[in-house]
Image (tube, rainbow, N blue to C red):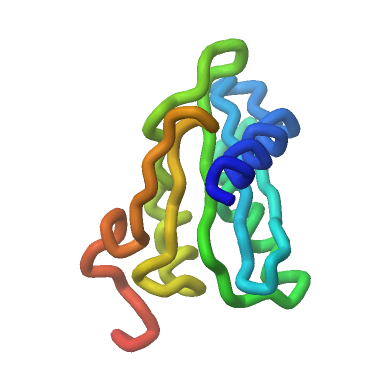
Amino acid sequence: MKKQLIETAVKAREMAYAPYSHYKVGAALLAKSGKIYTGCNVENASFTPTNCAERTAFFKAISEGDREFEMIAIVAGKDGEELSKNCTPCGVCRQVMTEFCHKDFKIILGTPDDFKVLTLEEIMPHSFTATEL
């Protein structure tokens, strides 16, 4: 399933809109329901409204009623170059994951043939959650 998820993220990356950085990101999010939601990064000339692939996938899933997730695959790299083997989610995406995922949520990084799996707790230790409110 992990390799299939990465391959789906690779396909999602093809839809990225990255005319400024040329750094294209694709994500494939597996919900507990079994449905896979894809996302790509969408840049904007003023940069602030840019949305990451990971959040695009999460927001698509949430807007369709899924709220429980198993894992996400993330692939990235400069347009026309090989995929990065270690493109971790940005801080904002990590915070979104913390809102909707358990500490053992799996984050798959790399390529279909060379990937690693991290947990949300590993990439977001000491996270801020609703329990702090």
